[in-house]
Length: 602
Image (cartoon, rainbow, N blue to C red; front, side):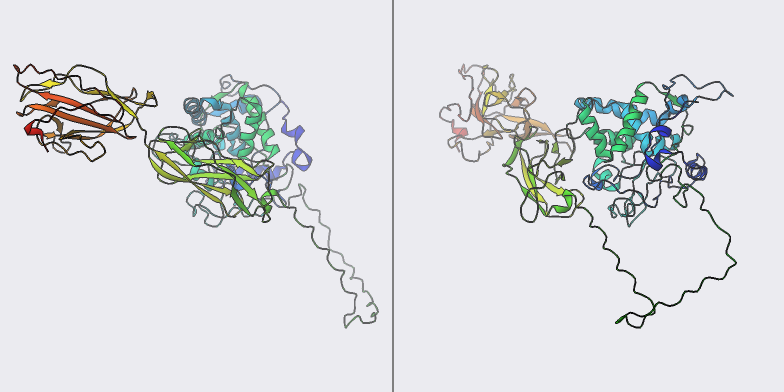
């Protein structure tokens, strides 16, 4: 049987094999038939707390415990399971990933290849994290939809050997209304799941206990901050952001390389179960924490020795013995950079404004400071987009966490405007500490055009009671470039004497026909609203019709941004022989209009 890395490489007590009692207890709590909801990762006496400068509530798991088992020395065996009665090798067992769990990892990686191709997320990384966090959902104990059979919960993060994270979800995800606990096969803490959660199986819910939802959420979490996981530095940063421990990083990387060499599918519920946890040193007795059965001695039959009282010292009071020596004060707990932060301060962020669908040219810059105003580096700052908006950070996320540099400055990722116009907010806060943050206001404005022009020079003419043969089509541009998705209004007006004035709708002459969406009936209108240019900047109006009134009429088209064009329409009998012109115009100028006919005068 191949030796395991875990038996050779773990440090100190954590390097030894787990004692038989500990293995039995852990296996019992995680066996496929177990009915309990907690997967056994309970607090151990003396367990180390999370790295304080990481900000435990700023990562996916809150630095909860994880499984430290490492793959065997031999290469994985991707071949199908051995014939019945033939024991599988350790490598074959470890290489096998339960079918539903493996499908969730691969589906998430496929989605990320489309939505965030620059991330280069390998599904094997999700498998490595899933192995370390939950033993592939406790060996694949999931139902047909990918939801775990019983909840997988980490220990409550009450500061007793772990990070201190008080309840943030009122027990919605973890059933604990006092403290948070990591939840599900990818072990998200509730406060992180609130913004990182995804619907990976298309059922309309974001459930941390569902392996499809959790795997997709983990993929997006690892792909934030513009990380390219094909680069070693970004890969390490992403993994450490999941759990801020160097040991965790090393364990995940080992499994990543193992799975990259090959794996195979095994039935759900038959995957291998881990045996060692980061919060219980291997070999420790789960009850005493020593790894050994406490030695006991038979009670002594001799009477206890009597000690003569010590003589009183002058001024020694009424006690017959010397006072106990004073207890030396406990050494002060070293402060982390986060502990020294008093507030956040804007670091020169310019006005945040962008046109719908475009990237913001300015980025949010925030500075962490002490009470005296000194800069604090190595502090994690979380930027959260709030408000009724579809704006995001680059990469599609609404939350980004950035570590301050040596000058105490955290530069948020670039903002990307959505289609919703108006103001929204970005809140900057220190991860792991309640101090004064900074709120920023950003504005998304509508797309605009500064020029409108007809795409044809064919005169627009019609006989009384007839139909205009040529539809009006216009092209919108802004500073010479195509202006797409620009809002426009078309109105048949009485006059354009004052282009700046609100147009007065004509009650005679040409008109549009539109269907009423309520009853499907056709209505006659002379104003069209809610129009938009297409991706080529073109705006094609519906067909125009004429009533029995003859003369020259005016169609005014205006867009967001001020571009205006007035087009002439002529209604004349067939024998009139009137030269109508082209009705073309650009920019904010309007085409010259002849003296209005009596029927057109205001």
